[in-house]
Structure formats: structure tokens, C-alpha cells
Length: 243
Image 1 (cartoon, rainbow, N blue to C red):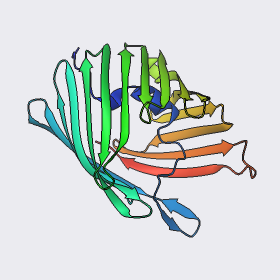
Image 2: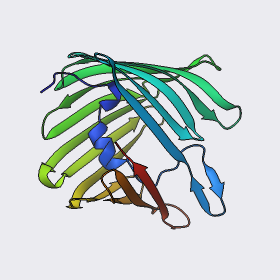
Image 3: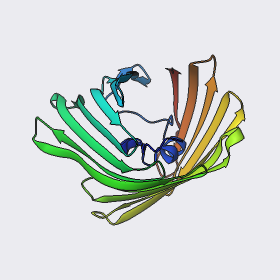
């Protein structure tokens, strides 16, 4: 098994995929047509430009776009990218992002920062550490310029059915507020994935993802906010073509 620790964004990735990926979420900027809000995600990756170096291009239309270089070896994972982030007032801001991770596949620590060239300010400044094993993955990270502490846990219950549970605890020091999100996933059929989550903010969500062909996936997601004045569910649908 490779000793490579991966990239900084791999910290807590398994828990994030259970608790946040593919749910009925909306990017900051989106297209609106009649009663529908929609956006388009496009990405491509070029492997092994030279040993250990690969490139990534990703576009979330019309929200953002970036070009990234990634370098990995047995004990480090480094990324550098430049991109455009949507700004409702000014259009788009150019942003430079750098991150680094050091350690092994089991235990690693790293940091991430993003610098907005237009405003000459740091949009992101975060750091963390992670632990990974075959059945348990845990991470402890600081976000929002060290104002937010986040701890996540992922446990694989049954790898054969991709059954797993995950939890995330997030505490904001500036407002002295703590939130907890728990969730689970299970492959009902070989090509059908179910996910559900619940948080202490009164929101519950569910996802049904179906693989139609070898690389084509369709996802239906719904979310209910029990604290909202009008308790209408948020429902979304997406399609993805994956390599």
C-alpha cells in the first residue's frame, strides 16, 4: 500500500462525502430559469505529466474556475492553483491557492491558504491533521482563519455494501456556537446508493444516486429545514459523467 498521504483536501473527505456530497445544495452563483436554479460542473485531469506531477482543470459555471498542479510523493502532497471566484458585486476575483500535506497514509498534517489578488487579502487560512485506517478515518481541522474548529469521523460498517456512518462537530469561536451533523450511507443495490443526514440546526437531508451506465450517474436529493417559517422541502436533481 502506498505511503503517500494524499492532498490537504483529502482530510475528512470520506466523512464529507457521506454528510455533504450530492445533497440539495446551491452554489453562491447560479442560473435561474422560471422555477429552476441550475449550474454546471466540468472537470478534467491529466495524470503523470512527470512522475508525481499531475494537473487538474475544474469549472463550476457560472460560479468559479481553476487550474491546479498537484505533486505527490511518499511523504508529501502539494498543490498550487490559480482561479476565478464569483463575486456578486465585481464579477470575478482572481485567487491563488497553495496547500501542503506531510506524513504517511495513516497519519498526516497540513495547511491551506488562499490569497485574493484583487483585495490583497487571505480568503482562507486553515490547518489540520488526520488519521486514516481501513475502517476508521478521523480529522481535526481549523478553518475561517482559525475561527472555526471542525472534527470529523468516518467508520466503514460493511465495505461490501459500502455501508458507513459519519459525524461532524463544528464550533465557531466568534459566535460561541457548536453544531453537529450525523449521517449514513448504504448501497441498497450494486448500482443504487442511499444517503441521509441530520444536524442540530434542524435540517434533514436524503440522497438517492443511481448508476445508469458504466460512467453515467443520476442523483436525486432533498432537504427539509424544520426551523424555517415555511416548511417546504428543497429538491434537486443532477447528472454526472465520471471517468
